[in-house]
Image (tube, rainbow, N blue to C red; front, side):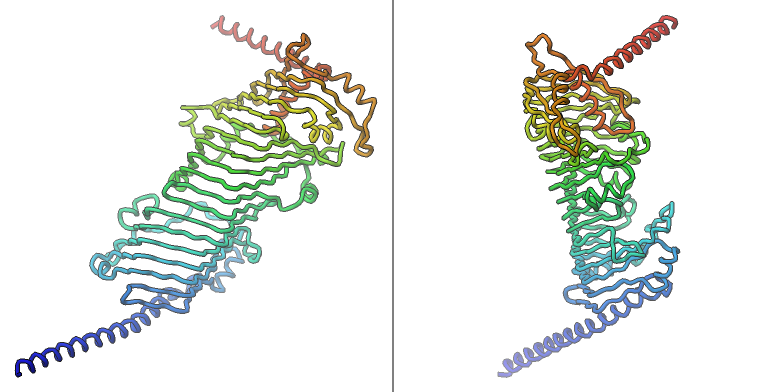
Length: 578
């Protein structure tokens, strides 16, 4: 009996001790939670705002320290510039300020003992949610020429040797960039930015790298993105995604849209100029070398895919011509890019291109369109080492011209040439002549009544000065109507008679009058490449269809041929002397 009583007493004592320890532990945890929470909150408030000269005041509504789950939660954080900072921005003493609200910062899995042991901060997860940031810029203040960098080497001490964070999850960031004088009219805006970063390490090893932190993966997504700082255009996307594992960037629903209608745009500009409107389903960049781009100012990418672009270009020729300004061709344009670029391939897939031009002859614009449009370009670069290995940029185009005729073309550009040498060749399949009336009637007051174009081919070489080559076009039953001025919009029977007698009705290979067209055009250096290509092809067309109209062209060609003969003779004489 005594033994049983002793055992019973022992159990009671043990239970009493365990109960007391449990209650004591709970009390300690509750006390520690309350005390540490208050201490942490007060300490954080003190540290954040102890410097009276700081540009910002940081406040938060609630801070919770979780002892058991090793977490810290901070809610409703506000970072606001002090009044003297705003005055300083407006006075031009500083260039930028930020204003930010953060709904939640939650830090989970803080390894306290690891820190006490090794002074290494280890965190399982940081979650940030609901961030609204306005970035204010005084555009009148010039940015400093030399950026100052933080002395990160001095950040480590006996109390801090590094940090490891397994996961950073950032959601719902809204960012606006505004002029300090027009805060309510942001010119750059992202309404929903989210990012996930895994295995972030910051220590004495990573600090020696160009990017002082390392991570295994980064995913970045944005919602609507817009840029409104351009004078005549707005840029926007519905989403931007960045994937670290394959170094790719995807832009969904990219738009480059005019701010104004064609009519208003043409009233705002002094001289004739193209108005662009571009929308795409997706733009994909694969294999972007991020280190080269950030640290070496080199844009190196494996491929760029532009899916389903819809491109509209319009021009009003009723406006005065621009003052002369030399327009370089592709090779020179690429050389002038201020950073090094290297793009293995560029693909335009299943796109559309429409060009409209209005002239004084008609109130309606003439139009040429390519639908669908597929383009592939290889070796787009100004990298000297790469050009030494391969100095040709090759571009291949496949399309349906005016929605009726298959068009295939190839342009090969010598990136190493001093005179922008390139070759162009192409083939157009069968197409009815009336398909071109959208262009000819409003631009030339000429309507093609009938005509069967069986095929057309061109092949020419060009420099910055002149293009030369040949054109083949097989057609029959060509007949046109010529209209009077835009006021009448009636057929001129006399001009129709003259035109139909001036043009050749057919050009068939089995006919002894079959002609091969001569392409020859002296470049107007005030115009860009598309104009040069079209004008070159046009000379070949005219020399076949209306040879009388190309008589001046023939004389010019003969003069150029004589010049070439003289140059060759002089060259031979010099060689003999040497």
